[in-house]
Structure formats: structure tokens, C-alpha cells
Length: 148
Image 1 (cartoon, rainbow, N blue to C red):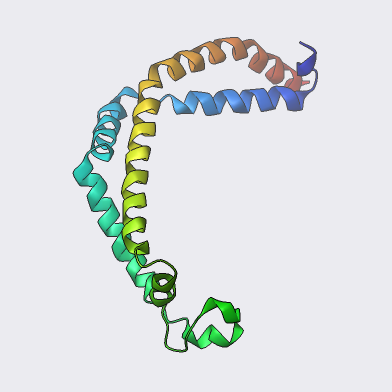
Image 2 (image 1 turned 90 degrees about the vertical axis):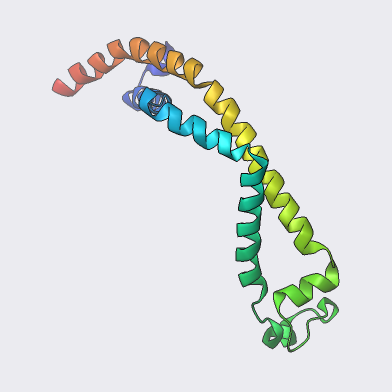
């Protein structure tokens, strides 16, 4: 194990192991996480999140940017009374519907990824257990080194 010749390398390895161990979530949290994943995969929840994000985006889109028209590229077609929404609508009349749909799909993707991560919980826990067992002798060596 030539790569473990310095204390820094051992500490890096221990840090990585600690992170992997932390990934293995206690069993008490499993039902809450499974419920959250189930909700993220629910089309009604996805639509609700997309609606909320559309409302938030609407607030930003109502920002008046016209006063900056003098500093914009002349081809940008920014008029003195424009909001961000005005500018974007001229570029793509359907941009708000597309933003809503992309957001809804993104929530669905997060749900799918979370579902797969949840399915990996057992394997991550087994890996964390093996790492703890393998690193226990190294931890003892570090503690002995610190005592000197």
C-alpha cells in the first residue's frame, strides 16, 4: 500500500470513508424519504412545482429592464418600457410554456434519480460497513502516531 505512506493520504481516505458512511441514512428516515420520492414521481406534484416555479419566474420576468436599453446591443431590441418578459416574448412567443414544461420534466427527473438513489441505499450501507472495517486498523495507527 504505497499510496498510504503519508498521514495526509490516510486522512483523505478516512474522510472519504466518513462521507460514504454518512450517505447510509438511518432506517428511521427511510419512510420519509420514500414518501418524498413517491411525491416527486407524482404528475400532480410535478405540475404543482412547475406552477410554483412559473409564478416565481413571473416575478423576475416582470423586472423592468428598459432603462438599460442604452447599454444593450442595438440588435437586442430592448425598448425603454420593456420588462424581461417583453424581451423574451419577442425572441420566443412560447417561452413561458416551454419554461413550465421543462420545469415539470426536471422535477420528474429528480424523482427518478432520487428513486434510484433510494434503491442503492442498501448497497451504500454495505460499502460503508466494509470501509469502516477496513479503515479501523488505519485509525488505530494514526492514533498511535499522534501519541508519539
